[in-house]
Length: 93
Image: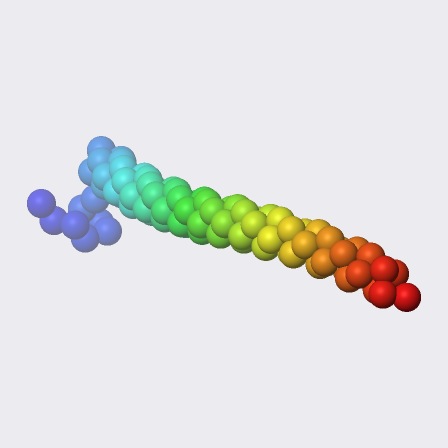
């Protein structure tokens, strides 16, 4: 098969263009698939990071609630002590 310009026939040119179009289609599909998988991977990573962030927030909120409850108990105890000290001081006067 001689591929010089003078010897190329229409059927050969059509076959060549068909093969070229098919190859370009396959390359395009490969690139599109690769990009889609990469996008899915990035989205999955982002979702995992968000889950971890939410988990850390929940832990922080729980720890903060515990600390607030402890502080409230301490303040209540201090009020009770202050009230008893006031009563003692009133009896001493």
